[in-house]
Length: 419
Image 1 (cartoon, helix red, strand yellow):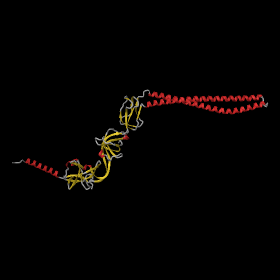
Image 2: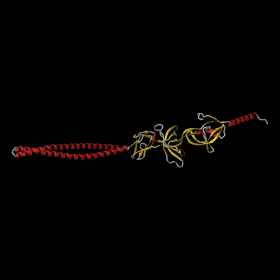
Image 3: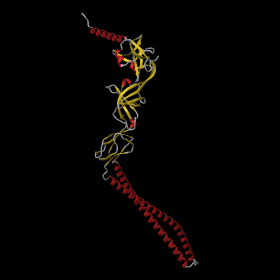
Image 4: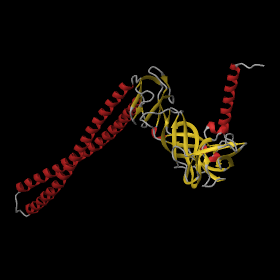
């Protein structure tokens, strides 16, 4: 039977293609390799969680009323003491002014009463001094009269001289009585003035208390921030009715932001407060935020077998805060000097963890026992030595490589082949 030229050409092409495929299948696989090295590595334990704030303050009203204005919105940076919202005050302002006027009036009366008391005490002191001076003069006048009376009996002085001394004595006695009366009047004025001072003080205290109460009530219509922070929620608008305890704004302290991360408890043995960590927010996966372990939970989840680790971190920019945002964390755990290789060299065959090493141009699967992990390296506790040539894997090579595959080793582009 005669075979056409066309059939011969197609057959030849098919044979050539099959030969090329066979040659490619039998040719060695190019593979980068590394040698295990002893390094100081720090375990990085991976976990996921949500961004939360340790200090979260709900600012609400102390009164039942209606919101007049709200001066802050979500995302605003606020300072402690800043006025953020105002309620309708009604007559509270007028009542506060009235109470203030009463306080001032009472204060004026108290000052007047104190002044009157001081005047009465001064008059009393003056009267006492005058009485003491008059007593000395009265003694002298009385002694003179007594002497003249004796001399009159002896006929040495006349009756007229005795009468003049008697008149002087009577005048001194009357003067003493007048001074005592003035002192008693001053004492009565002191008693009355002290009563007036006490009454004025009570009135002033009552006025001040009333004014303070009115001002406190007026101040209760103003809602101010109790911390420096960021507004994360606005729960009320102008015109809304509020009651005591209902939040108007929610403020978070950006200095207390952390990720409540869940970490496999089997990997968490070396994690302690103060350990360093890296945080990657889902909204910015490329930027690593430096963090530290602020708290390690003392109780694990019995179902998921995970422990909660709170990783505190600073915000990238002022006011950037998204509570509840998902985040990935890498927490520093155990650290040691050990034999290690890149993680991408490790694979699994038939349920066993291991690596492929190159021996006489062929790949050989070697089971290994791994230890701690970092983001790029893994500890090799058993199975390898520093002289081994460990093949670096990628998805394509991992799927193609088997025990006994022909390989052609090349140094990795980054020069990490080792010894």
